Amino acid sequence: MPEISRFLGIVIQMYREKDAPHHRAHFHAIYAGESAVFGLEPVEFLSGQIPNRQRRFVEVWTELHETELLLDWKLLQEGERTNPIEPLR
Image (cartoon, rainbow, N blue to C red; front, side, top):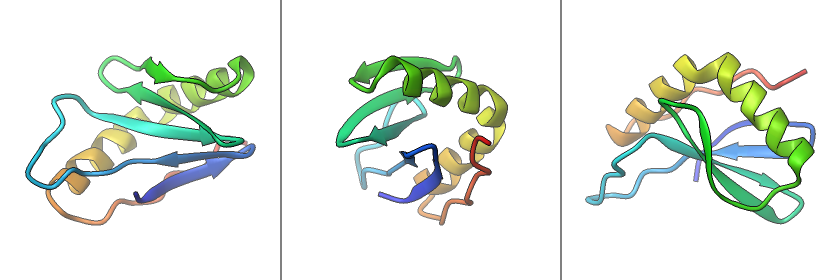
């Protein structure tokens, strides 16, 4: 699963399922061994478990980089490499 960004101990990853396209653009946030899924268009928490503080960091970061995340989603679904996205500082 390609790593898109990493900040404050949170790893952001996105992946493509070959021959089984997802119906909605989304990514995974991993923190301290736990993970959560966040959707795009609209930005929202979909499932999983990470601490509330880290969840808020991910939501803020996503709002700032939604256009880049959507581009990475499109690239990945077309079999291309993703571009790294600036971490939250």
